[in-house]
Image 1: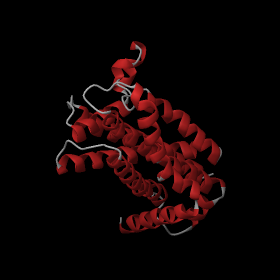
Image 2: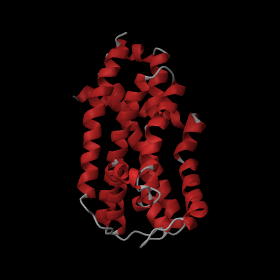
Image 3: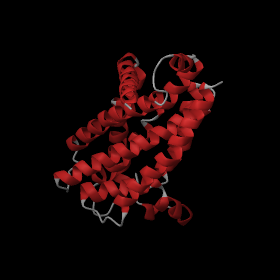
Image 4: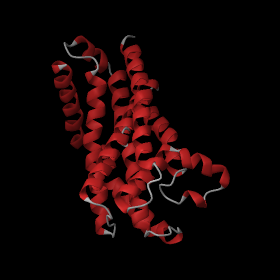
Length: 254
């Protein structure tokens, strides 16, 4: 166990150290979230009715959840690059705990997701977002966000090992996750959608997590969304972590 922890931390550090040397990835965690937030608030916000809330209050939890879910794309691209360049085989030849490769990757995502959450919160506060919550509820919301982001890191880890190239890993991840974020309550009230989409939007994990964040940070009605958001996060981890580990063993054994 001690070796697994130390090796996991080494792999996580390796992935974080590489970020400043990859400007495109660094922009994805800093400038891009700010750009999305400002565009939605100032371009679309005036046309969207959100009863009981200003649009920036309504939007911020949704856009943070979207951004944190996409944070795992770095894991997908990085794992595929390591696999295609033979680095995974190199890791296997070293006296290190094998699960550390995936554990370190997903742990690094927690650090980058934390950075993007605080950047978006800071920007939101500047343009008018305000909490209606006590410190405990704000902290619980942050924990929920990082847990949900960690769950999607395992989704992207599986996708990264499943496809044939880093470009495909990025594209497939985008195609798989992007529609889920828009068919949810992240950007518009679910009631405004066509009835054929409403049933899906209501059970969509993004809707559940966004509603939980609004309950925790804005005092919106809970409606069991908080425990539902934690449940969705653990279900996603329980499904995709074993899939990613099995695919990793298969890919590394070739």
